[in-house]
Image (cartoon, rainbow, N blue to C red):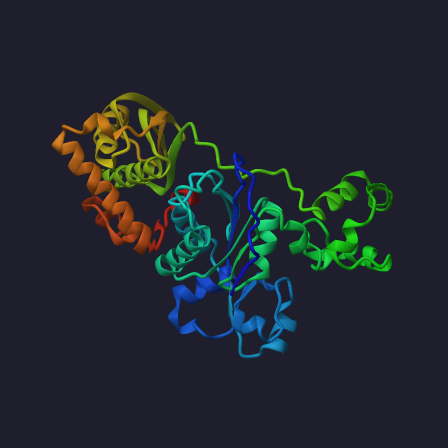
Length: 415
């Protein structure tokens, strides 16, 4: 479904704000249907006690988010109920985000299934905005199996409303100058920040649409709803939303760690764990476009005694083999007691931008560069377990696996 309002002529010399909202349709339920093809085309409910997400097959029968399962199953008795697993949804959200980041470096994750992009100043790069958004929509579906609805406008508020009005698989572009015409006929509860209580109170005053709300003076709204809520309603009825797209700050360090249940002195198991930690740290560095100058290893013995050691990485790197080589050298000097280890951790710091040009004439470094990014691409599409180094196979004898990697004792390793 697509909607486009004719675009007015823009004054020369101005730069139009382009904010895009991407909303994954029926996110949790859609992920479950993608993971289990037997659920496709069937009504699916995800949650515990209340419905956290319902597939569109269930929504067509009247099921809504936050509805109790008793009521949902009364409306849709043949629905499949799935408790859900956060790590599956986090993985799918990460895959969607990585696709969006290829269109703009300014991507804000508002929720697992909710993204904002800033495309301001990209008129030359994307002269046909609607075609670009269609391409974005299709890529997400092709590479993740998930459908998304997209809205584009001059603010986050309008972009989010536009995308949600067109679900599922919708696309709406609200051109500059057409904000009022788009908003006025909408029910007041479509505005973010106007909940059922405020909508009911406005309804008692004969105010049912955004256009009717816009005609109320600011003083009347603040007197009825308070200074903050009243001003917010007054501004949003006019499409005013000063919030910009907030891209996440680049971290200053990256770390991964795990508890070893029962402890171990097995050199093969420990080597496998260091290799896995190095892979996870290196993959994260590449994902954020950084290289590390400093590597730190920390260990804790089963008698609670801990130790740590740091080394400088020269040159800076985000290659797992370089990290592992440095880590094994540090570990050889660090592990000095004949006591089992119960916890190990690896961290990198002194991060700097990834400067591949430093290695242009180093054939070995170039081979590693292409290999690392080839592995990233395979894992991004088929899951972490699609590729394992040799010691990783040894770890699979000790740990269960899931799409996002090994099931270790520290949840952060699943990220």
